[in-house]
Image 1: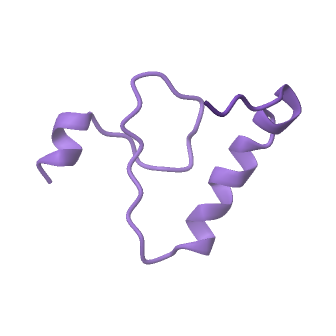
Image 2: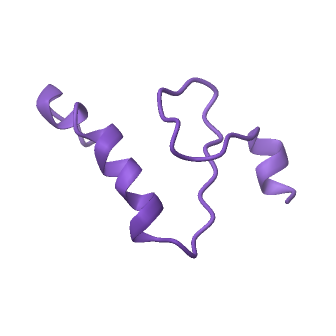
Length: 51
């Protein structure tokens, strides 16, 4: 199992945020129950899978 070191975890927000501009034609939906990411639209997993 991958266990990131804390300094890598701190970069995740920036890394995920860059996907918005790197993949403009991809619709990314954040279906996490608890999240600190605000760069993707939010949805429940049920609604996302039935879209």
